[in-house]
Amino acid sequence: MDHEETVSISDVILQRRGARKAADIPDAVMQLLQRGELETVNLTEWLAIDHLKLLQHVLCELELHKESDEMLSGLERLDRKKIMSTIPAIARNWLRLLDRMPEKENTRIFHALACHSSDSVRCWAAYMIGLDERLTIMQKLTDVRQFAADSHFGVREMAWMAVRESISNELLQALDILHEWVRDEDSNIRRFAVESLRPQGVWAKHLPELKKQPELALSLLEEVKSDPVKYVQDSVGNWLNDAGKANPDWVHRICDAWLEASDTKETKRIVARATRSLLKK
Image (tube, rainbow, N blue to C red):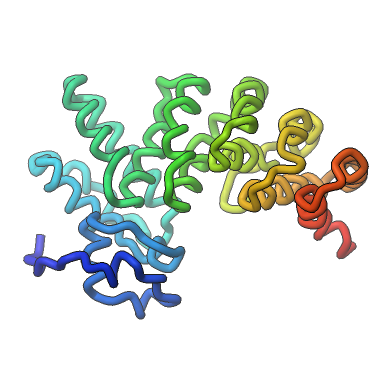
């Protein structure tokens, strides 16, 4: 690895708002991000991370020098700009490596990744859970919960994306588990429950059963039809907007029923978001 100057983390760096363009990210900030010593603060920084450079630093940090070549093998062929293929690829390589290690070492390394100061590294850990075929849907949702509640927006997004395939394969069981999550005190957990079940969310595998039968998730959605947090409201509105693409009449009926039963500004906001596409037709 090339020699790099030590960069201190000043209050100015910690309190930055983030550049609008990748080219405008200060060198000092980029160095810290690539070394895993700093979290990203906006989507521009999150997308600017070179995950292979970050991986090299993390391998050295965890004293996995001997495993470095094997971990990086094949990853060089990835298009580094395609973050939604890069993160799962790195997660798969971590799973292969940990699978051959003693349990104690396996646990040490995963804990280090899951609690890392870099949000990008925590994204790898979330995907490791989603890709682990030995885990049941209950185990995956239980293990990914810490990432669903993460303080960083990027980690929270990767958390639900990581288990999306498993949710699709075990939809009814997932619905049963997540019905409890929409009652959680943590708004991030409530949002995860809704977002992970969106019939056809952006950047994610569609859920054919929910596209055909959105009513399967109605009892879950009813729990958050007047959620006090906008982050959750947006997710509920987007969920219904998704459903409206194939089932517009159903969405209209649900929204009318919600407005009649819950005449609050929160429900009105959700309904406005839910019907935005229907109003354009």
